Image (spheres, rainbow, N blue to C red):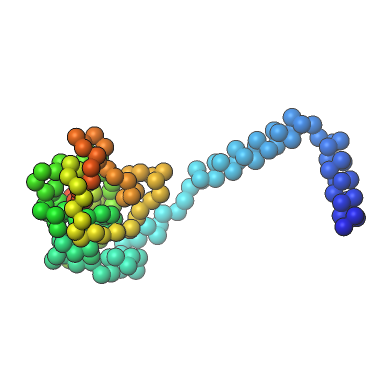
Length: 178
């Protein structure tokens, strides 16, 4: 153990004699700046743009259906989180009476099993009444951490509404995702 300590001490002393503090700080700063720029490098997105959706189908899209909007596996609910408005007096795309739709929303893209196409869905929380408590669903397809809030479904999206009290979530069809 003494030889290891002695070797390390000699190495550190030699390094300290040959370098300045400013030079060492400059090298460390360069390494940190280089490491911070790694996320800016180009990434191949060919797998995400593949036209063969069956090969890349998620667990949700394999079991999705188009008939019952009160079931958690209804195709529009691939990224929803919360109580379904279709079970709480509203529809899949509208809030129940007495609630107001949030002014903000999160987005997802879901595959419609009847035509195999991917659609952009805007998920809106309906606010103003206590939580519905029926048909709790947790779709996590495409969900991102909170630092990407437009793709995060764990946030109560009642910002800007007259009340921040969450009631249920609706899934508005925006259009084809191209």
